[in-house]
Amino acid sequence: MSYQPVPTVRRRRLGSTLRRLRTEAGMTLDAAAEALNAAGNGSSDTRRWTAPKLSRIENANATIRITEVEPLLRAYRITDGDIRIALEGLAKDAGKRGWWQTYRGVVGPAYADYISLESDADSVRDYAPLVVPGLLQTPDYARETIAANAVARSAAEVDALAEVRLARQAVLTRPAAPLKLWAVIHEAALRRRFAGRPAIMTAQLRRLLAVAEWPTVTLQVMPIDAAPNPGDAGAFTVVGFPGPMPDVVTQENLRGPLYVEGVDDVNVFADAFGHIVDSALSTDATKALIAGLV
Image (cartoon, rainbow, N blue to C red; front, side, top):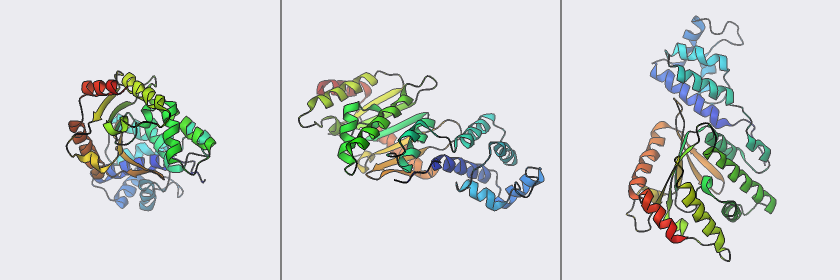
């Protein structure tokens, strides 16, 4: 399996943010390059700003040095220090090697991109109609559900993927700013039983009851008798970031995650999640339903 060591989704987020800031400043690529060079930001031919160079950066086809972020923001008349810090951090981390690199034999590029997103995020909103979200799964539940989907994987690869899924859960308990998770799980997913191994689901339900008490986790159940709502279109995850970084939506399939990154498109999913929340049980009713299933 091929593997891209650079998490390209970080480049895309950085590039799309820079494009938005340039557009909001009312500048074309040519005008931006001219302003940068006139300010003395690019004194040699190799470092001179050009419209094609800016275009490559905005389209995630080229990297940007950390020292190049501030001149760009000055050209776009951005004075907010938090924006500068966020973009410099993203530029620094564009090629960062994360812990998941250890599993490069089983973690493909798209999944590696998602893990890097999750590690950068400050919030995740997850609608899960069929299975419990990965961030909340027990070891046995993770392995069983991965084995069911990874039909072409060996037992060792399934074990490795289960380890990755469990390692991802560290974002929920990291000392500095733990991830805020809002998950809506369909009742049908909670009523599933593992033939011959009922203890797997019992342990998973108890896990959900435990994490539902965490201050950074909001858990709701979509009841089977709920009225039609946007969740009927299928599972999705809205990954949110601090500062100026745009949110990203992921949709999972057998080949891995697919990304939705345009602001307008992401807003469609964010609005849909709001309607899903309104259709779901309250957090207290959710706990009562799960407790009744244990």
